[in-house]
Image 1 (cartoon, rainbow, N blue to C red):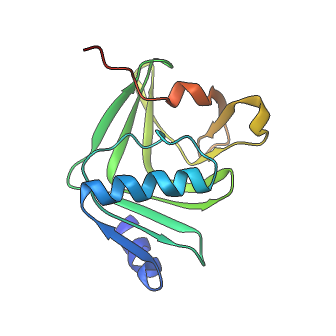
Image 2: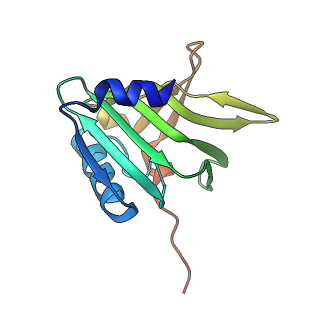
Image 3: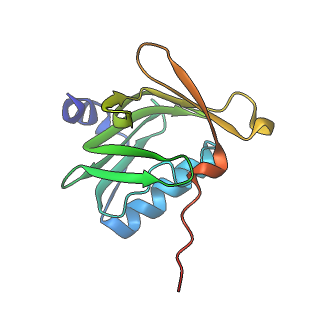
Length: 145
């Protein structure tokens, strides 16, 4: 379904290819909408796009990727197609992102920052259950020399 959604919004979208350019453009978009830059810690994005008129963004990878956010002690899974509708401080109708809670994978559908001064990102699943996570928990890990 995500691939069909991408094709629907591709017209009039800015489309980028290759891991370096996609990572740069994704980080620029996240900064523009005031979301944590490491919300999508992906290094092998093949294509990304953003249709400013509809607010639709997408990224495509060759294979799903799992990432452990050490500070929050959570693992996130990013599918081959990740899509969302974005606006300042909000990503809604997200598809292709899950997190592991105990033994289960939970689909995530929304990320938003209601109060930027709180330093918290609210993460929601389709059932409306939310969790507040510190923005700093998304910061990239420091690598030891």
